[in-house]
Length: 63
Image (cartoon, rainbow, N blue to C red):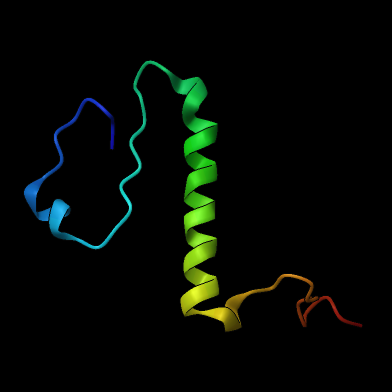
């Protein structure tokens, strides 16, 4: 969502991380993108560790 928008009341009740983008300061998008990947990585490490592929070679690449 954009930083100048009001968050919907229903969305505020959800258990999500809201990332706010600026309509005018688009050079900050990279930092927001990094926050997204960091949050996703933390979630996967905590809740879905079997999905981590760090230091693993996918089976379709193995020969």
